[in-house]
Amino acid sequence: MAKRIETIGLSCYYGGTKAVDSVNITIEPKSVTAVIGPSGCGKSTFLRALNRMHEVIPAARVEGQVLLDDVDIYTPGVDPAAVRRVIGMVFQRPNPFPTMSIFDNAVAGLRLNGVRGKSALEEAAERSLRAANLWDEVKDRLRRPGAGLSGGQQQRLCIARAIAVEPQVLLMDEPCSSLDPISTLAIEDLMVDLKERYTIVIVTHNMQQAARVSDTTAFFTLRGQGEPGHLVEVDSTQRIFTNPAQRRTEDYITGRFG
Image 1 (cartoon, helix red, strand yellow):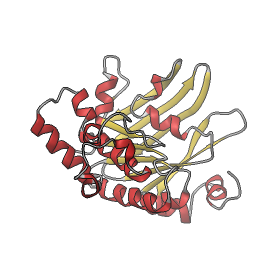
Image 2 (cartoon, helix red, strand yellow):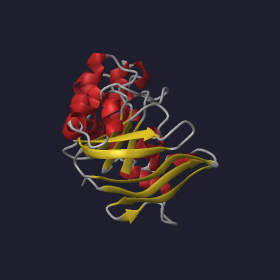
Image 3 (cartoon, one colour):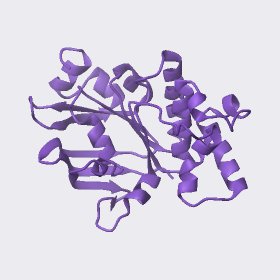
């Protein structure tokens, strides 16, 4: 079941440098939330903090809370690996495991979690590849290398890999930035389908994409050079793109800065 995310005073650091300052936001289940803003404003850092990927970077840390259905994922004793099973992630560039087949890529997370049964893995592979709208394109070549697929197919394979473990939340960090327009449209259509089952948060530099796929949009920016990124406002996507509450949001949307 899709889960609700809430951040309370979430700040992210790289060593002594604060990259994101005190973000308070609620992300509703079974919806797409787009995070937009200029380069360097902490969008991707914020996203990685939502499933504890930020702390993988040496000396990186967070302050504040990230609540998943009211449970703080940063509470001492919470297993980060368990968090990442519930909150999956798709990265900017397609990253299928190059030495693995399409099938083995799709079920890699399940095997990591101890699933070994042949029928269970076959069922999960088909289910996740169908959910990623990839099954019909690859069903006759499942044993061929995943790296042999096109860029758009590789990204959908990575999405299949992420959802095979049945997370409740899916994070996407500029998933279409390296794809052609046709592949981008396929991923956007897929996001619309997936939000029926998952809570989706997407970082995108493409405002037209945010307008097309998201229900809610959050605008991040910098207060000044060398300052941390912060959340300016969050609202329905229609409101953000037609009548934002903050002048800085309007200036960014209309291209007057950024």
